[in-house]
Length: 139
Image (tube, rainbow, N blue to C red; front, side, top):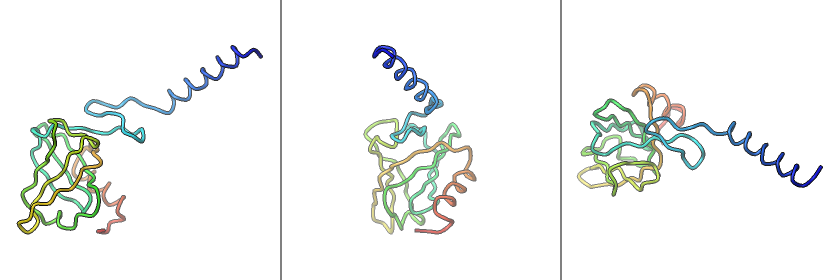
């Protein structure tokens, strides 16, 4: 087999495998570092923020879009905190945009970096995902 033919076969195989291994992200999503579709949202559209766990927070937008945020590290005060806000240099928040969740824990402002954002259908789905990821226990 000639070198040109071998190269053509290899390139064809790579193209087929690449098309099988990826899927296009849906609306409001983009490709994450691990190939999973990752959601983004606009800070001004946030209607409510509710902690579900020391590392997970549920967000609902004014358009009734729902998101499960994953926080970096252990945030023991987040479950009983007040005064939630999302701080970002941009109006659109994605996991790699450097956004943080700000909250008051006993009158002290705490900042937790957002490292993951997933679109979810409902709060129930978000709670189910948190239970699956944590084994139903607090960290």
